[in-house]
Image (tube, rainbow, N blue to C red; front, side, top):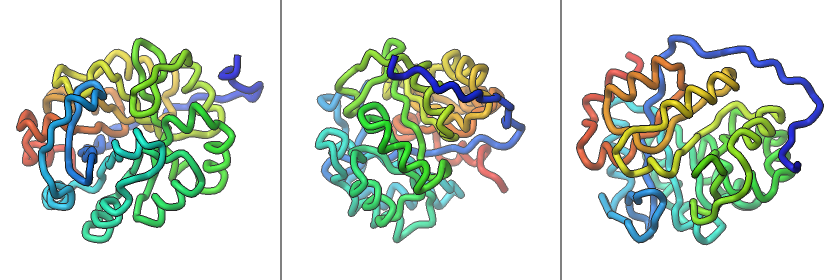
Length: 260
């Protein structure tokens, strides 16, 4: 019952349009290196580059403007660990960085913004400390806070996907949209890092119920044709990670999603 929405009425008015979907490359960090996992399993770690800044500059060089930076060490430690990498990338590129992983306190969010993040992703903390996240929405605005809805078997997962809760995705989304959340990154953990396609049907269901959301797909995006389908559906953005690192999607191909 804790996740039932308030009595306030929320009117869904679609803001989706024919605007280009944002392509948002992902850099996941462990020990300051660019890595990828499969289905959130730390034992599947594969290092792709020891220099995340080099990777970020490659993205920027083709006109990409956004970066999804995830502190996997922080997610496990429950506090930010790789803030120096965030600072290095933000100081040496013009990328708009959304940063997540280990943001569990006021001190963490202040450190993230001070280190150059334009937005932060609230995942585990949005489950464990709703009042703190609502305070962040008031203090920093809904433009700065992205809700991280990581889902496994229809339930929200937390702590770097190591723990599954009993909270349904729908209750989670209903609650935070009532409270003013605008941006949501939704990751189907079963798809992440598998290069087997994203949860298109799930995203369609979310947009049908919450058409006002700026919904960002994450997990399993494996081809340009799939990205075009997500764009047609009206998603705000799509996070692409392993498909780039495994050369399933080439950087040049992403130019189709970049505003000229």
